[in-house]
View 1: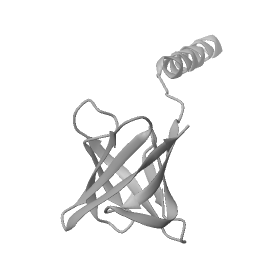
View 2: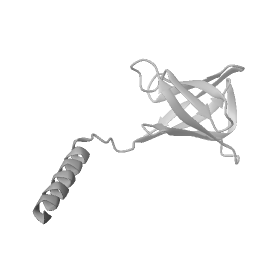
View 3: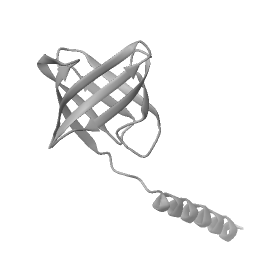
View 4: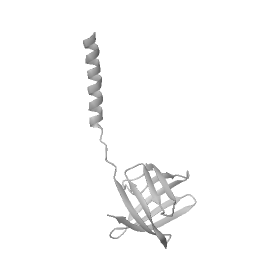
Length: 124
């Protein structure tokens, strides 16, 4: 009886270990965008937008306010566009980061009430 219980425990442990080994986990990767303009006007202080393959993206306005966007879904094959998110105030928005020339980017955050457009560059 003890041998049977021991064999069952070993079988369960080995199947659990092999299941964890087959899970393909991507390490978190974060990109930092420096935003210099909002709605065509130069920001008094550059804002930082942290994005990547994590669930929460953060827009740090560097004046004490931070907006956290929890990613709810993605549409299309572009990893930086077609993103549906909910901010920390409960509002739903669509986010699109479009590459321009060189390291320049345009970040569009579209709410039902309006669109916020930022321009800046990726920090490498």
